[in-house]
Amino acid sequence: MTKRYKVWVSRPLFAEALARLDQHVTLDAEAIERVHAPEQLRERLAGVDAAIVSLSDRVDAATLAGNGRLRVIANLAVGYNNLDIEALTRAGVLACNTPDVLNETTADYAWALMLAAARRVGAAERWLRAGHWTGAMRFDDWLGVDLHGKTLGILGMGRIGQAVARRASGFDMRVLYHNRSRLPESIERQCAARWVDQATLLRESDHLVLVLPYTPENHHVIGAAELAQMKRGSVLVNIARGGLVDEAALATALVSGQLAAAGLDVYEDEPAVHPALLELEQVVLSPHMGSASADTRRNMAQLAVDNVLAGLGLGSQAGHPPTPINPQVLHARGVLDKA
Ligand code: DGY
Image 1 (cartoon, rainbow, N blue to C red):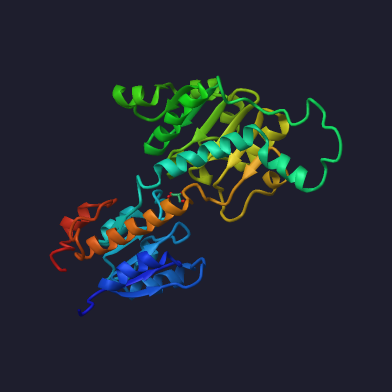
Image 2 (image 1 turned 180 degrees about the vertical axis):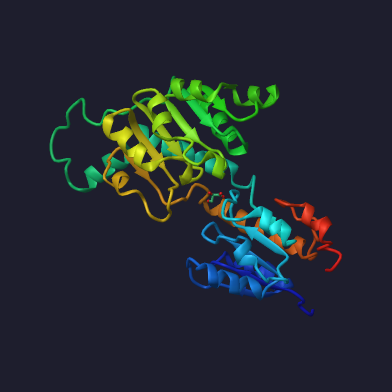
């Protein structure tokens, strides 16, 4: 079969996903993990018809300037704040992401962080491994914050937020959420969750989980003022995007005891972590791995491949990419007519 299209994969990916691409296109897959400088990214994208990229690849108008070839960008993530969707749409490039396949895994991880932060799992493990458990332990050592019977607040009640909420019934928690728009009653019932305004959410939550997409409008949606509004001694968990939280203000709130603990999977300036947070035992830190289970990462890779192939008009879903972000491009540019 003559391979008409060239596809670049910006990071090492599972062999089975690459093998599927390789059947249909000429493949150029990076063999080592790296962060691509804007100019490198521009060059790589200039020579291909489609690319699978990750969150560290920022694709904007400058990256696309002069690129008349690119048709599809498939992001290996559900969040796509690394993509300038307006610029991609203007350039006639179809953008796709990987929603849904990671909902349950990411929700599991929100609970892992919530439990670890509230019950001081990270600090206790470090203490034990350092050989400090040498004698009797005080009865009032390692006191944490309960989850059962408390109030869980969810800021951002999309599909992952809903999956976080559904798990709360096992902990006998009251669930409040805030979203710009209230969910249909049927979904609220499934999640046993009640809509409240943001101020109420901050004031009443014992555990607050951030699950909302990051946009310039919600930069530092949790800043010093919001942290001050939160219940004293509560726990904050961020599995969404680092820019939602003012990290310096969070460190101050933790030091003062306004917050008991925090669980963070995402950071304002990844891979850097605010130095003040690194100093604090009451913060559980992980390296943006919320969706990282073996099954889910494999499913994300396969979904990105589906999007690339279908966006190029190839394979069994030709013309119908499963999860487009800007589907109008398919019609406006006649991407598929040209395939
Ligand atoms: C996503 O998919 O947006 C996650 O943050 C990446 O793991």
